[in-house]
Length: 351
Image 1 (cartoon, rainbow, N blue to C red):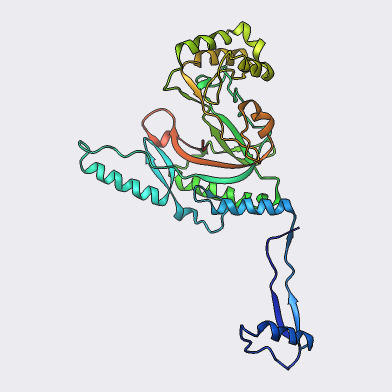
Image 2 (image 1 turned 90 degrees about the vertical axis):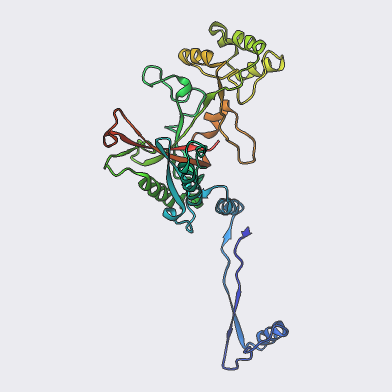
C-alpha cells in the first residue's frame, strides 16, 4: 500500500497534571516518552488514507498535470477561468489565449497601427493549451486513416477532412470526479467567446446516443507538403499505388516486408503505405502523394511507446487518455451580415 498522506500524532492531556506545557524542542521527545509511561497523555493518531499502487499512480499523474506549466489542467480548482483566459481576434476568427499572451499581443497591434507602412503586422498570439483526462467514446471515434470522410456527403476532399472523436467521463474514479469541472470550465470558455446574437453555438459539443453532451476534438491529419519528395522516390511510390496492385500490399505484414526490401522508405510524415480501404479513399491518396504530408497524432501508450497510425482504432477507441488541445471560434455562412452567420467553436488537439 502507498501512503500519500502521513498522519500526525496529536497529544492530549489525560488528566489535570498537564506536564507537557511549555515543552522545549530539546526535551520534547523525552517529555513525551515520560508522559506516555506515566499515562498522563493519550495519543490521538489520525489514520492516514491508504491507496493502492494504481491509485497512487493516478494521483501522481493528476498532480503532475496541475503542476505542468505547459498546459492548463481544466480540473484545477485554483484556476479562475475568466481571469486566466481571453479570446483574441485574429484573421476573422478568435483564438483562446492566456491573458498575459493576449495583453502582449494587443500591445504589438497598437505599435503596428502607429505606422502600418513601416511596421510588420504581429504574428498570431500563442494559443492556450488546455488539458484534461477523458475516455475516448467508442461510437464516435473517427481518427483512423480514412477519418470519417464520405465523398458523397462531405464538402471537399479527403485532404481537407478532419479526424474527430468525442470525449466522455474517464473510467478511473480519480479523473471521473474531475469530469464535471472540466466540462463546466469548457462551457465557461465557450460562453466567453460567444457572439451576442443569441445563435446556438455549433461544433464543440455533440449529443451522444445516450443523450450526453460530449466534447468534440478534431485533428488535422494532412497538411500541404512544402518540400516535395525527390522525383526518383515519386516513381517508386506511384508504382506501389497503382490501384490494381494496391490490394496486394495492404496488410501491415506485407508493408513491413516491402520496407525491409527497400521498395520504399516510410515515416510518419509521408503518405507511403497509408492504409485506406475504400476505393474512393485510395484514389484520393494517390492524388495527394506528391502534395501532402501526414501530421501524425502525438499518441503514446502509458509507458511512452508511440502509437502508430495503423493502430489508432485498436489502441485509442474507448480508452482513458490525457488530452492536450486548443480552442478557436469563428462564424460560418454566406453574406456580410454577421448577425446571420452561425457561431462555431472547435477544440483542436495539440500536435
